[in-house]
Length: 258
Image 1 (tube, one colour):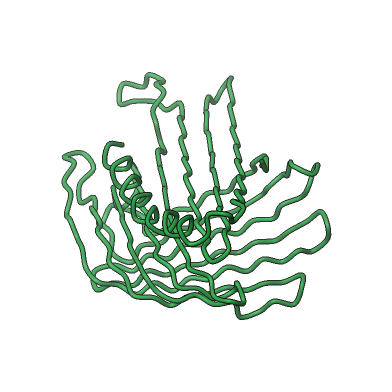
Image 2 (spheres, helix red, strand yellow):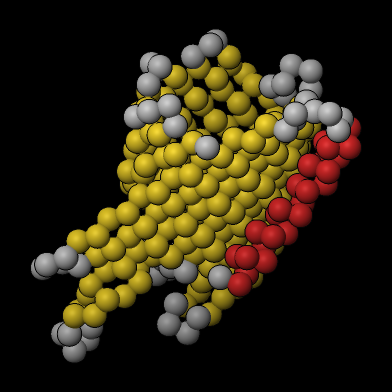
């Protein structure tokens, strides 16, 4: 958790320069913030006792020539299991934290940009305990027909990863190196009240390639509230023998837009 906080703070500092520069460029520019907070929780009792929490916060600041985006999310899950003595005990079975920051300089059309991006994932039960990515490059919009938009980027970057070799002895192998990050986002406004969103990313390095996917469908409940159903996937090509390559999460969250 300490590593997560430190790395997330570093990511925020990375984009702070973009925010300060944007403010210096035009002090009269009206600052526009968009905030979306989502939360999902499940609790069961009786023959089976479980508790899970899934939360996320998105903050976006759009200025005349700059766009700054911050994301923070958490996944926590407890399950009742039987230990070696046959006694039921409650144990944490999922604990994952994610943070990212992106600062983009927007060109005249507002759909292409030069940007810096940083993200950090801390996963207590994943194939990698910590995974940090930094990248810089050019992004563009390839489709914009009113109801459908498609944005993408292919950029160089660098990563640091702590791969879990043995969970019981807490044996960790550190990796780092240059990588190429390919990412895209499809947004489809199906109706005035329903929106489909697909985010994909591949972070390819010599030691490991990480694939990320987030698929969701949002339905508007009111002007500020939405119900969101989604499915996330994270896949690493290089993991320890006793670790799964792919982690998935299915969620139903309530989203509030400020």
